[in-house]
Length: 420
Image 1 (cartoon, one colour):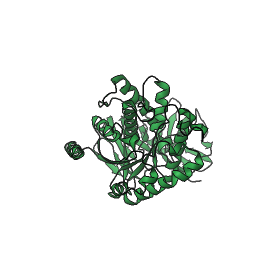
Image 2 (tube, rainbow, N blue to C red; image 1 turned 180 degrees about the vertical axis):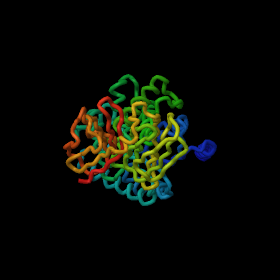
Image 3 (spheres, rainbow, N blue to C red; image 1 turned 135 degrees about the horizontal axis):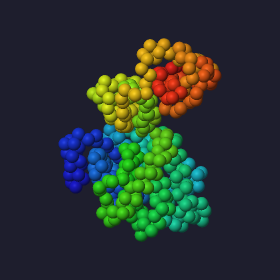
Image 4 (cartoon, rainbow, N blue to C red; image 1 turned 120 degrees about the horizontal axis):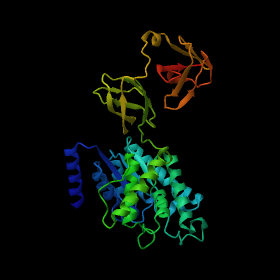
């Protein structure tokens, strides 16, 4: 009854705020249910203005092997419509000798992933990288010495979870990596329960902050929800370390999965902005230019503004109309005071190119030419050039260019295609 009331409350809050609801299924064991990680994440997200509906299958001591045939777990997976499905293996198994992990862990992880993909084609699998025991795994140390220490056990867990992500095209929630970084920076803050294995409330709060940044690509710094028993100073440091560990290395944790990352850079020329899409794992785009104009499907558009000012431009990147990410930035456009005013001169200038040369037509004075790839990287920068033909080697593709006088007045800008 309690869980039903909580679910109803979450849905109610979602409906009045029009927030996007993310549905998450946790599959694991006591490392997930001790201190109630799923609902800790729900409350953390709510305090940041985001809404999550959760369910779980987390019997104590369960392995991927047991989950792969468990009726309750299988039925929850087959309900479908999950946005994220979290997979957490028994705490020791992924740290064992690689040959043993290949036998006792990987086949059952693969089996679970196959079922998840069948019934949740738009769902993303999140492998929950756990942490090494406080002083290593004493019970298995003699048979496999690398796990005799925390550091050795943690490294094996990291390797195995990243391998499972690569094999199953899944995303990693790097709780164990955050745990290691936090232990190193704040050794006096206790992350473990008295058994030196399960998480303390600090450890569970760290896991929740890690999942939040993994799923939303946002910082948890400033979250007002703090799990009971975690003091405010520790909450801030946990938020900071988890945010930095996830977001500073996000491609390490997510490169094998399908969660898109929306991002763009831009160049402005007077009232026109040229956008360069840098999104990852996405194949559909929606732009809002902040002036009432929007555009769908175009990857790297140009947009002319009617009024000078500062605008918030959003890009929504989607993967197969399922998973999506939103990126916002502000741009400022104005009629550039350094723009050459001679309209006829600007119109007469042309930039011609092939694979080996770039030729400037209609302008014979010294100039500066800058060229950018469509991901925003500067690939050519001439300085005080007086040649009308420039030898260069650029890969085939579309480029942005800016042509300046030697006193940095903009002559012309635009896009040019090099097709060899």
